[in-house]
Image (cartoon, rainbow, N blue to C red; front, side, top):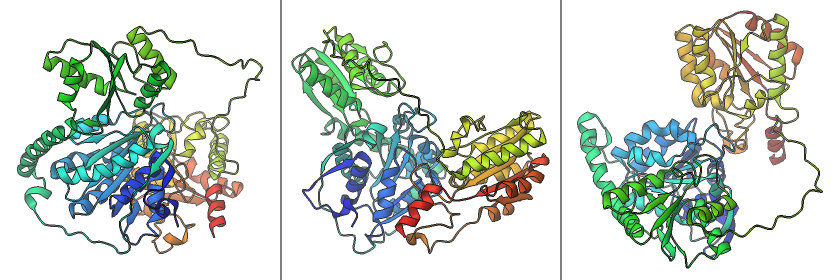
Length: 564
């Protein structure tokens, strides 16, 4: 039995933040889940995907992208079932189209949207701060600081969602998602039988034509007033400490503030407002806090989201208080924080004496060689790059070729000795960007996209390329799995676990030909000379063409063989 469902009420588990969210969702009665994997959110979906095979009353799917996952979860919640979708921060960009209108039409069953931000770009192409989506959409936002809070807030989020009939955003960061903490779990409801919801037709709610949308927008604004009243009295917004100085903080930064309090013994000097229910802003709570202090430091990672909220409250309430933070240079707007950095910022802001830390002598430690990430030994992507590179070199066009790439482990093609990654924006940009390059330059263009990314965001731009007669070669790296995020399934895979054996397989070559691409070839990159012969005619022509390099991920193949 899976450990997350084997644990009984009252048992204490050492859980990742993501595992705590999964357990909290199950205890809350989650019935339908959908996601596209993306670090740092992946473990939520991974666990629910595995668990569903032991719980007949739970359905979970890996959708082809985050937009689809959002729509699956939203429809389930419209029938009265509790649903969840999870994604990384840039995945919320993909899902933002349904999100904005979903806020208008709302839900009946509780719906939780988990978005995991990635300060410092540990596995991402930007440091986007997803809290602004709460303001943009007008939806409630909760921010846990620990795995325990992630567990508790997930349960609360479903209740809040049903109370307001709105989806609720639960925002984590890498250090919350991937930290481990002790979580005392509660009782799981029965999942012995599937439960079906019931959709009650109401075109004045569920079909937001302009006349309906105008009314639903007003409904949303009224619901957010109620949400603000709830935020004002929420137990997730708490204070501790005392004194004439103040700190306002949230999320993982709240842990670093608490560490500084203990290390520097600041409980008699500084008062802290720790916010967990951060949108809508608890205006009265913030105002009352500001009236009690002479100076306040706002400690939050990434953008000055709370800092600007605090300034707005101070201005509207006529409160004269110095507000320090990112705008005053005490903390940066980039990268994640660390405890020492926060401790130093507090000392600078409040002119405190900071004890000099004891630094151990490590001069004797030899300098370690750099260990940049690299493609795995035996990775088929490495062989594909070599095949394409050799042929382009033999044709004398390597130096004149632009190599757009995409999101996946194959992005490591940027590194020596491969160096075949020149341009990247987002999922699917390896198909859309070549369209622009093809009309704007005389360069040859060979782009790379993974199988999972192809289904996620490659189909629409490829159809556009066919229709608009763009000229480039797209290489689809088909390694049978979503490798970078933990070997989640893809529609085209032939190697699959038993639980997916009844699912139909969608052949990439058939899809490409159906979209109208005439020049298509499938190769095995491990058969190098044969593969070179097959791709040479494709690369000789400056036409729209697709090369499908099909060979399984070596780690996925070994993992699957071990399970069987």
